[in-house]
Amino acid sequence: MKRVYKEVTSRPAAAGWGVALDGRPMRTPGRNELVVPSEKLAEAIAAEWDAQQDEIRPASMPLTRLVATAIDRTAAQRDLVIDEIAGYAGTDLVCYRADRPPTLVARQQEVWQPLLDWATLRYDAALAVTCGVIPTPQPPPTLKAFAAAVAAQDDFRLTALHALTTACGSLVIGLAVMERWIDAAEAFAASQLDETFQIEEWGEDAEATARREALAADIAAVARFLRLLS
Image 1: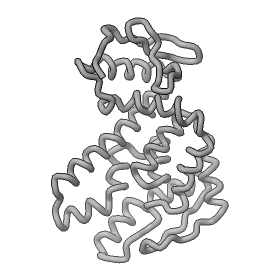
Image 2 (image 1 turned 90 degrees about the vertical axis):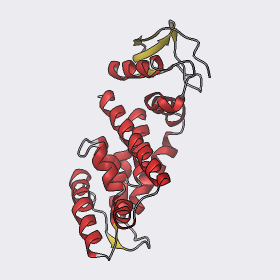
Image 3 (image 1 turned 90 degrees about the horizontal axis):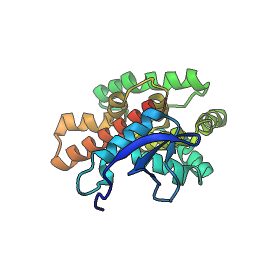
Image 4 (image 1 turned 60 degrees about the vertical axis):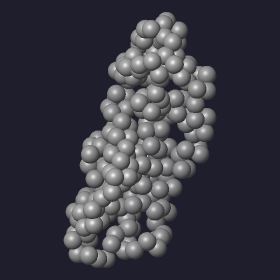
């Protein structure tokens, strides 16, 4: 898609802030007006659009994509999104530990256990830990507590949490980023712990490097989105 607008500005809008292209209110792909609760977020979205050259490249506008998802999808399918996110508590990455080699076991304990301890205290919800990949049932009260924590988020934060949880394979890690208990780099390191260990042992090919760089960038973009919302 070619760039046909000249000026991009943020502006006050009903119930928040919007973005205008040549004075016209920006709309999402679903034809809803793009309105966000934070002036800083609106300014950052405007900057994404202003940075486009002759061709508009959606992949270079992660904040715009997140907002459009929140407005077009999350708001319309909120219960489905909540169920998708909360479902990760039943098989959360940080609950499934290796039984060997000892160095990997120790690293998982060092990085993942503090996350579990934080989540237990924060949400009064203790997750069971197991070795191997066979699913272990989680206590119903724990699953209920995590589902309630997810459902308490507004559409924008719910969208961010969905992106973090799916990227990291862990609701615990997603919540920890959202609550600013860890940052994006720590979230990437925790979610990629097993793969990083294997790379240290056997090396990494170019395809894996590119994939991991893209994942780190996605997590960082969502963390920035959450900061701009505040």
